[in-house]
Length: 279
Image 1: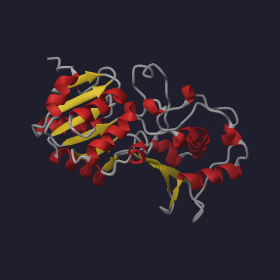
Image 2: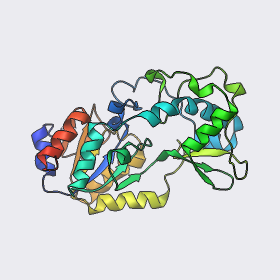
Image 3: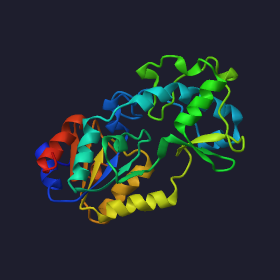
Image 4: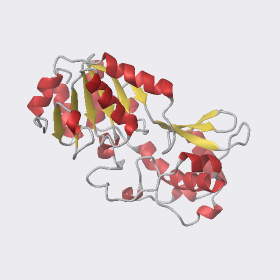
C-alpha cells in the first residue's frame, strides 16, 4: 500500500513525538555536495575505493588520496543548508533524540546539532593504519600540498565531485606522493567507513539506542539502499515505531513508512520545524 504523501500527514504523524532522524546524502545536495543515488545522480557511474584494496594496495591509496585531495576544498567549504539548520532547531527545542547520519561532511555539527552519530565517520579526521595515530584532515592536506606542489590548486567542477569528496582525476596520479603518518611513516586513511568495511559495532549500538528511545523515525535524504542505514528502518518497524520518509524519489524503505513525502528537504524541514513548534 502506498503511504500518505502530504505535508499535513507528515506533521500530524510527528507532532508530539520525540524524533530520531536518519539522514542521508540527499540532505547535503543543497549545500553543493552530490549524492550517489538521487534523481540527478543515479545514472552517474562512480567507482569508490574498496576497503580491502585501500588497505592492501599502495597504488589504490595513491589513487584515493590524489583524487580526494582535489575535492577536499569543496567539501570543507560547503555550508549547512536550511535542512541542516531545521534539524538543529528541532534539537534545540528538545524534540530530537538524536541524528544518525550516513554523511561524512560534518554539516550537521556546523549547523549546530550536537547529538549526532556519524555512522560512516568523518572526512575531517584521518587515522594511521599502522600505529593508530590520528590527525585532522587539514593537517594531512597541508602535508599533501607540501609533497605535491600545485596539485590541489586545480579547479574541480561540481559535476566531478562525489559525496565522499572524491573527484574524477586520472592524469598525473602516477607521480602523486600520498601522505604518511608523521609518527610512524605508516599509511593514512580518512576516518570513514569505506565500501566493503563494517561500521564499528559501538557506533551501531549508539544509533540503535537513539531509534529505540524515539517516538518516531524520520528518514531524510536517504535511498536506504545501503543496509547500514536501512537496518534502523527495520528496527523501528519491529519495535512498533512509525517511520516517515522525506526525500526526492523512491526508497527501499517506502513499504515500511507511515508517511513518505517526495520533496526538497530545504523546503520541507524548515516548514516541519515551524509546524512542530520549533521554528
